[in-house]
Image (cartoon, rainbow, N blue to C red; front, side, top):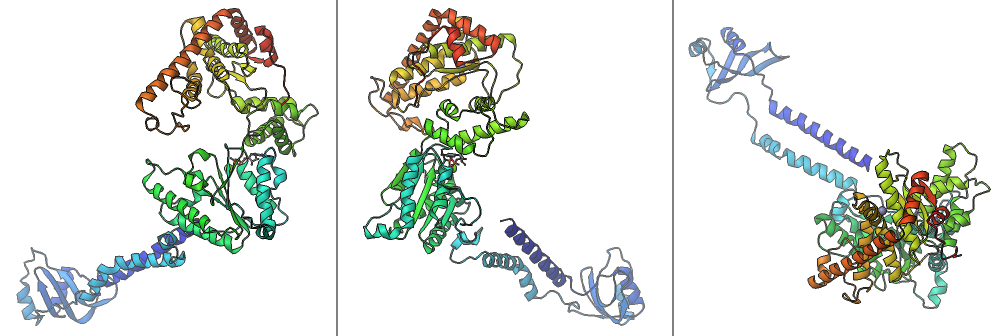
Length: 613
Ligand code: ADP
Ligand code: MG
Ligand code: ZN
C-alpha cells in the first residue's frame, strides 16, 4: 500500500518537472531582453539591422552578433522596452544609421500550435498519470474499483509445515460448536462420500456469539484441522471509500477459492456489512456495504453445492444481521457460540496456563468455579495477568494469590489510588453495604462474593455477586431481587443520610435495563401483556417499535416496578439497620470483605450450599 502511493507520487513529480521544463523552453523563445541602454549603444554603433515597434515595446535584429551584457552568450535578435521619459529622438537616430523599421514583427511570436499545446498540457498530464496508474494497478476488468487500491489476488492462509498452527486442541469449552464444524471438516476431507449419498453440505456456517468466545480462534482451528486452502478476510476490509471495490474483491475471493476447491472462506465480523438495511447509515458507506453484501449472497447462490467451497462467517451481533443472510442456501447453519460453562472454563484455563509454571496451591477447578460468565478471551487475559503479576513480584511460579488478584483486576478494573475524604469513604461503605445486605437477604439471589470500598475503574466501591451455577433463564422474582439489590446502595444512603449522591448512576442504568426488559420484552407486566414491545437493540429507536399508548404504559409499568422495589429496599434496610451498620463499620476497617466474612458479619447464613455445577 505504502509503496504504491510512493511510486504514484514520484511519477506525478517527474511528469510535472518534465512538463515544466518543456513549457518554459517553449515559452522563453530565444531572444534575450536587453536594456534600453544597450539598445541605444548598438544603434549608435550602427549595428542594428531592423526593428519593429509596437507602443513602447521594441524588437529587432543586429547586423553582427554581440556579446549579451546581461545574459550569457551572443545575440542577434532582441527585445527591449523604451522608457516613456526617453527624450532621445529615436526616429532621427534610426534614420541616420540606416535602420529599417519594419511593419512585421522581427521576433517570431509563439505560434498557434505551441499555444494549443500549452493549453492542452494539463489535460495531457492528467490523462498520462491516469493511464499510468491504471496500467500499473491493472484496471480493466475491475472497473472503477480496480483502478484504485487494487490488491494482489487473495491468497489462502498458507499451510506451512513446521509453524505452529492453531488446531482444535487449542480450543476448549465449546465442544458442541466443534462438533458442528467437524462435519464441515469431514465433508472437505471426503467430499465423495457425501456426494454419493446425495447429501449437500451447508454452503455457509455462521458463528454467532458475544465477543471473546473464540469464534475467530475456532475458524483458524478449522483451517489448521481441515488441511484445505483457507481464505480469511475481515468484512471491514471490503469497505472502501469507492463504491464497487468491495464487490469486486468478493468476486475475486470466491473465484480464487473455487479454483482450489475444496476450500474454506472465512469472513470475520460480518455484521459490519451484513446489518439490516435501514436508514441513517452513512451516505457512501451504505451503498458500498449493500453492494458487498449482495455480491457475497450472489456468490453463495452461485454454488452448486458440490463445488466444495464452504463459507464460515463470524459475528458478535447475530440479532442485527440482515435476514437475507440466514436464508436457506446461504448461512443456513447458525452456530451459537456461548460463553463456556464451568467445565469449559477449566479446560480453557488449562490451555492458557500450558506454558505458565503454576505453584502447587493453584486450583484451576476452583478458579473456574469463581469465574462464571467469563469468556475464553477473559480467561486468557486472566491467566496472563496472573503471570504478569508473578513476574512483577520476582517469583518463580504463579501462585493462587496472584491469580485471585488478577481475577479482581479483570473483573473489577484496576485499583485506583484516590485519596477519598473520610466522609465519602463512610458514605461509600454504607452504599456498598446496602447492595450487599439486600443481596444476602433476598432469597434466591446470587450470593455476594466480595465487597470493597477500594476505588476501582470508575467505581468508588464494588459489591460483586455471581451466581452459584450458570443460569440461562430468570424468574420474575429473581429479577426483582436484582433490582432491589441494585437500588440497595441508593436506599442505604437514603436511610442513613436522608439524601442521595451521584454515586448511583451505574446502579440506575442497570435497574432501568432490567425493568425495561421485564415490562417490554419478557411479558412480566399484566398491563403491557405478553408482547415484545421494544426492540432488544437499545440503539434502535423506540418510537417505531410500539404505539405511543403502549410506550406510555411501558413507562408507567417500569416506574411502578422500580418504585415498589425501592420501597422494599428502604424498608428492608430500616428493618436490618443493625446489620447495615455492622457491615459498613467492618468495611471502613478492612476495605475489602470476602464472601465468608461478609455473611458472618451480617449474621446471615447462606441458604444454599456450594453447589457443584
Ligand atoms: P471472538 O472472535 O469470538 O471475539 P477470539 O477468537 O478472537 O474471540 O478469542 C480471543 C482469544 O480468546 C483467543 O485468541 C484465545 O486465546 C481466547 N479464547 C477464546 N475462546 C477460547 C476457547 N474456547 N478456548 C481457548 N481459548 C479461547
Ligand atoms: Mg473475532
Ligand atoms: Zn452502587
